[in-house]
Image (cartoon, rainbow, N blue to C red):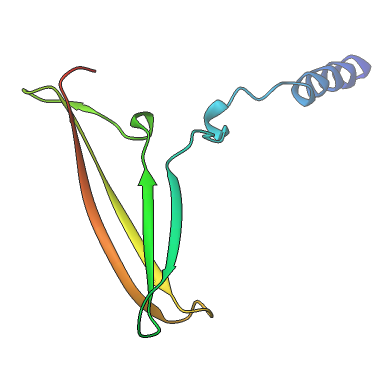
Length: 102
């Protein structure tokens, strides 16, 4: 009986100190895109907002085609009021990248 308890204790201690080899939970720390905003005062109490976005090539997945490699992404810009309750406007752009070589 002592041997059974000792062997169970030994097995449980091995399980308790086992390391987790599941690397699928590692967070992706790559930058998805860079953005910048510029706001300008306009005429008649209006404002102009310029939105700049830069998407690195390593943030999109290229697919081989007959002409080279292609990738695509969609940008959605939503502008809300100060309380973030009412949507003022929304713009959507679909961009396509074509490269001759990888």
